Length: 628
Image (cartoon, rainbow, N blue to C red; front, side):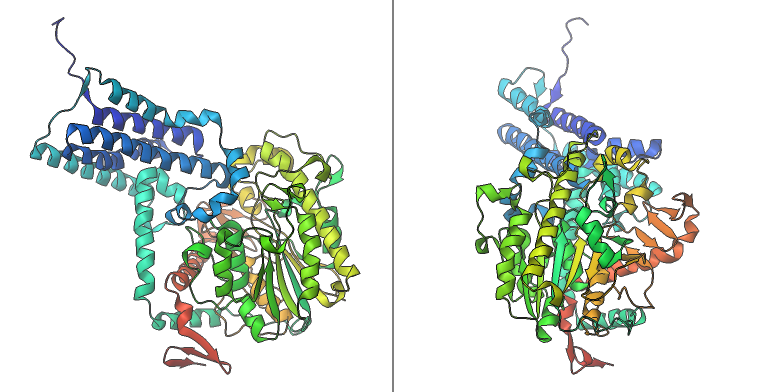
C-alpha cells in the first residue's frame, strides 16, 4: 500500500479547478452581488462550471501538444474577460457587454481613468494562468494527459449539458423568466455565471442585428397609437414663450442633484448654480435615464425622447439609423444647429452619430487651442472650453441651437491645485473626496460663461438649459456617500441619487422650482414646445414638463421607475414619503407600463423603425398607410 502511486490529475482538471476557484474569489471580492438565501449562494458558487466544462472540454479532441496550448490560451482569454469586467465594475458597478468591447475608438481617451482603476495588485487576477504556465513548462509527473475514447467525450459533454440545465433550472426557481431580464446584468451573472453571461450577450447581439433586417413599417402603427394615447398637450401659457430665441444647452458632466444647495465644511459646493436656479425654472425631481452609454446615452435621450439600450451605446450600435431628433426638427424651423465638445470627434462615435441627429456643425478638439497648461484629465478644462466657445457662438447665424458638453467633472475627477475652489472631502472614498472640487470647478466655469454671454449680448436673447448627464458616484461608494448624506444608502436612496439637475432659464421669466417627477426623455418635448413647435406627430416617450396633463411617471433604464408616491427598484416597492418598503401590489400597475415603454423603445432602435415614418404637411405616413 505504501508504494502505491497517486494517480495524478489531468491538466484539463487543474485548469478548470483553478479558474473556477478564481472566479468565485472574484465574485466575493470584486463584485457586489446581492445574495438573499443559501440557494442563491449555491447557484453563484456552481455557475461558472458549465461554461468552463464546455470551453475547456474542446481540448479532449486535441493531441497533447495542442491540448496544452489550447488550455493555456483559453485560461488567458477567460482571465482577460473576467478582469475587464472587474475594471469596468469598479467605476460603473456593471458588467461589460459585447457592444462596449467593440468601442475601441474610445480607448485612447481613457488613459487617466484606467490608471486610476488599475493597481499592481491586480496581477493576482492572473495567478492561475501563471501557475498553469509553470505546470506546462515543468511537466511534473502528477500531471497526466489521458487519451479519451469517443464515448468518454460524449459522456463528458452530456454531463456538461446536464450541469448547465441543472444550473438554469435551479436559477429559474429563484428568478422566473430569467433570460428575459436582459437589462439586469447582475441577476444574469448571479444566476448563469460571468462566462455564460458573455455567451448569452453574444446571442443577444446576433439577435439584435437580425431585427433590423426583419423589421417592417407595420410595427409602427401600434407605437403611434401608444404615443397618441400618452401625448400631453402643451400649456398654452408657456407654448412659444421662447419662440425665435437662441438655445444654449449645457450637459453637466457627472452632476447629481444632491450637490445643489449642499454645503461641506461651511462652503457651498455649487454657489453659482444655487443662485442661477432662483432665476430659472428648476426641476428638483428630475432623473437621468442613461445605461451603459453614459454621456452619449444622455445625448441620445435628450435629442430623441427615446430610451437608450440596455446594453452598449446607441451612438455606436445604431448610429446609421433614421432619427427624428431635435437638431433635425430645428433645422426645418430656421435654426442653425451645432454641438461643441473639446474632445476627439470620434469619441462615442459622435462624428457619425451627429450626422444622423441632424447637426449642421460639430466643433471638436481641432476647433480649440488645446495645450498641456489648459488641459487636465480628459482634455480641455471647462473654463477654457467655455471661453474659447464664445467666439464660435458669435460666428453662428441666429437663431442657433448649441449644445455644450463639459469635461472636467469626469472620473477620476482630477484637478490641479490652482483650480481648486473648495477642499476635498475626507471620507473613506478617494473618488467622492475628489468629486466635490471638480463639481465646484465646473460651477465656477458656468459662472464665468454666463458672464461672458452677458458681455457679448447673447444672454438676453437666449434660453439656457442645463442638465446633469448621469451620476458621478457609483454604488461602489455607498458607504462614503452615507457619511456625506448622513443616512444609509439603501436601494431607495440609491435610486433617489439618480436625480440630476435640470434648469431652464428664459429671459424675462421669474424663477420657480417644480417638483414634478420627470426625466431626460421629457427635455425634447418641453424645449420644442417652449419654441412654439408642437410634438404631437413625434414618436417620443417624454412629455412637456409644463403641460397640465403631464403624468408623474419616470422609467430608468434598469427597469426601476418613480411615480408621485412610489419608487420601484430591485423588485421592491418603496413609499416615496417614508422610503420604506410597501406591498409590491401598489407598484404593480406601473410595472407593465415601464417594461412596455422600454420594449417599444428598444424595438424602434433595433428595427430602425423610424425609417418607415414620415410627416408630410402635418399628416403622418407609415409606409403606404396614412394616419391622421
